[in-house]
Image (cartoon, rainbow, N blue to C red; front, side, top):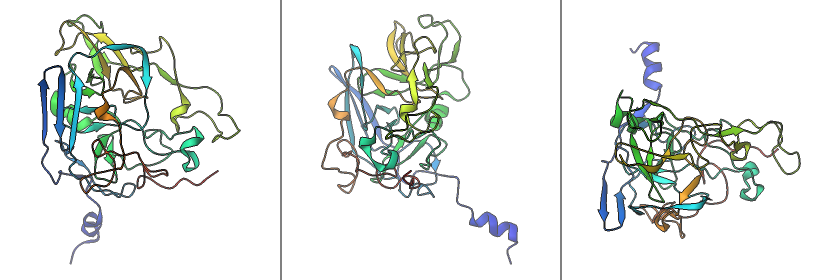
Length: 305
């Protein structure tokens, strides 16, 4: 007869799991473009999926992205919504937004922040979860990937490529941006919570507490990075310097603005397709359905106020 303690242990779900499929990613340079082909399966153990707040199972995808090898900054940053910001070097997409709106209404102007704590989207320790079509994707720093690439070394680490072609690095970068001999430090974003309370008309009300994307504002000179969460500087891969993005442990986590022109291969298109011709993703990411739970299926239902 099993002891009560053993029965409790046996009843607990595993906190992590090895991917059921093998990671497959190919990054090649073809003339003026960098092509990233991947099945979206991570190269590290993940949290348990399905879980209490995310009922979806990780499934292979069919990603085929292209980005310019020599990207150009645009005169003004470009905002985007509900599409991948970029793709990690392991072929998993970096997707900062969630299809979660106040009262379930995308027209409300109030979008829940995935890392804001107001809703539980079932994120694992890598700041990732799974879309209904099985696409595992990051909403913040991919801790497992960063650990695999950098270990305990304090150095700049290339984590991926943005849709506009600029490189994406982990949170550490040189103190002096153009000096490769300067020590590295954790980069701080220039975003901050707004002060006071939200409007009372047609809004959730309450204090600006980070529950919504709209709770944040850009503050010039506050951090180390620009409004795109990037800066010019030298990196191990670009010793002469380049513009690069940084993933931070505070908002925006993954950038919410493009410094360059994003490639159309990252745009979400309909009709939605996935491994079984259903779901989201380019060429399998269609527009997320109206509703909540991360475009259906992520997190608890939030009751209208």
